[in-house]
Image 1 (cartoon, rainbow, N blue to C red):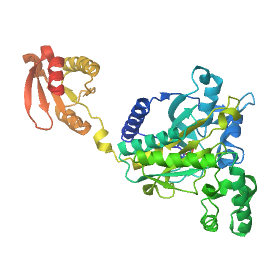
Image 2 (image 1 turned 135 degrees about the horizontal axis):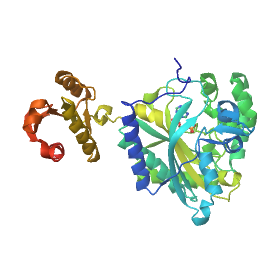
Image 3 (image 1 turned 180 degrees about the horizontal axis):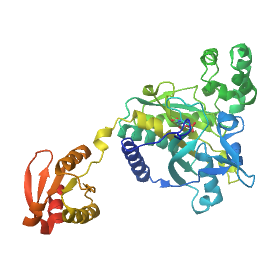
Image 4 (image 1 turned 90 degrees about the vertical axis):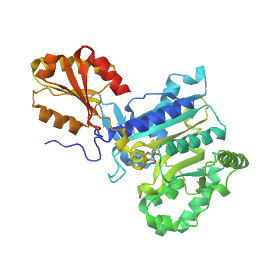
Length: 418
Ligand code: AMP
């Protein structure tokens, strides 16, 4: 038997209802806040991700699903959404109509990471981006959207962590200070961190290896190196989060693995996910639109890990399961033919109706109705057919009523919608 690929998974009925509900609540929230949906391809030219995510990142270095297509063009399954959304924003000159664009997308991403709990090779993200606004207030709005979504989904202990990454003016000074400090603890760093120390020292702060984390307890904080504008910007973020009553933690260790981030950066973390504590992450990436060939354009956004969100969502999955409103237990060929017409008409009226197609006994049809969790059963045997009636049984109260065959669909609609 052929099994699915390691790190990939199926989402089956029983689980999917929760995913659908999360998606519905997220879409409603985004649309209420003026975001529009965008759909982007699953594959892009490899070059797009190399340039936007940065050659010196885990994603590009070791996690992308990259292959040559039949003509030899290098193609990659998207590992994240921002690069493609920026490409679309530039390619379709969306900025010409209005530089301010608020976009969201929901879909699968692909990274060849080591599979473990909460980490898959195909996983899903809910992604939102705002182009064309430099004000830190829109960063706050994104954090507000995230915390609102998490509370609507009854996620228990989600906390916003925030930090500033500075700007191209003040970050170099911090990088130098950090690199100097890293030199002094080199013997305690893992080999990846030694390499990052020279090329992208910020990423050392992000290392999950316990020995590295310990070595970095006294690492300098970027917040002590911010220029006046970045300081003011970060203060405004905090003040408006306070005004909106959004609790947050300032986390000087919070850096993003992607090169294009600047100023506000944030993560939503939760205690219930173990090692994979981040359920969403994002921040400002003012340099990327220009970097990919567009105009100078501020931008900010986030990505939520859908799989992790589904795990910690407090909505009751059992409440979301949809069972049939009606099961028609029809005995004999003529009854079956009538039943079939009814279930089709009922479906059109939004009533979920099922029947048995294999001519089983009344007893086994009742058993099946029970197993499906049908709330009512309509029994139509030869006797009933002769009398021009059927019996409608409420499976919960066990109450039975007789309905005339002339207006079955109307009668059922009335009972079910009552
Ligand atoms: P990133 O694009 O790396 O900032 O990730 C954003 C969010 O996507 C994370 O906070 C995770 O919740 C989720 N995520 C990232 N990688 C994976 C993965 N391999 N499996 C499941 N979720 C992931």
